Length: 199
Image (cartoon, rainbow, N blue to C red; front, side, top):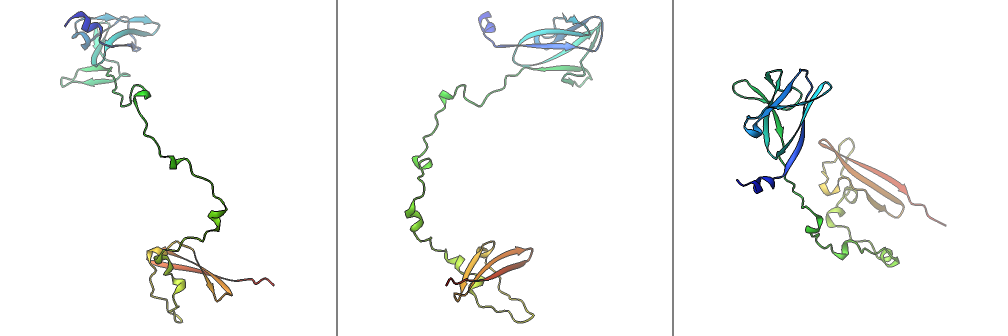
């Protein structure tokens, strides 16, 4: 591999620290196949080193006063032989987003999605739309089949549930009704209100 290819590889600087005591702390790692032992700089109770490495996953160990060990407060793994190593993950995450929004073209939105006009008087002068046929068949429009002490066996349709219905009874009363389902039972509530006649 030529030197130009090596120099063009993006690298990341990372701080590795040891704060578990010792007089002399060094580090060895898989970034150079465990060949070089580098001393960490002492900053009070902490030993640090700055490593500049290409992206990848590396294993490393600390050498504290001549003993090989790993830092328990940093990510670590254990191999089949029982040796523990710290892990340094410098893998570059692959972004799913484009580098710049200029590369992304937004689809045109239809004019109807943002040019809705306000209501005018003509909209309110039109009659309301016709009621769908299934909603016309309600309990309010059926003759009562209840006898004293017996409940009706009429089971409401699913289109009748959770709707408010009104019915003009002979021009004298207004009937409001709504049917709800509770477990296996249907409950219909009716409200009759007299229509007030203005003189």
